[in-house]
Image (cartoon, rainbow, N blue to C red; front, side, top):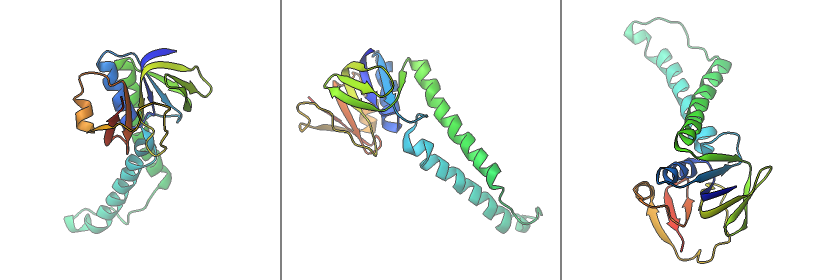
Length: 185
């Protein structure tokens, strides 16, 4: 399949870059190997952890505060299965939201592991190769060095600068979960 911009990685750096490139008029394909978009933070890190912290806070509040406020509910007891179901629902809602944003902005999701065949082609495991004019590498915790000449000449901007972009860069590597983006000649 052919596109203007191929985004390798569907985490916080990749999915936002894919959506923004589509908003700028590019035909975009995002390659992500995980069964859900959102990266480590959304699927198994930050968001699930915050859900568990919320559950812990509720237990603590019920134990330490309710009686002081005149609310008697008995000793708090964790229903682990119910808490896990709630946490999974939060994650599903958020990852599903990204899928909805992809559809609304015309971003295609190529499901599978991607690897560079050459400077303008990504092979997608179990899928069709993606040929592109520009590439964004947003592999987060799993850095991948693309075969691109001039990779050492770096122009870096922060994520706010990337969101303010008015044109799609030719090639872009997003480092550290989308905190810094570096454009290469």
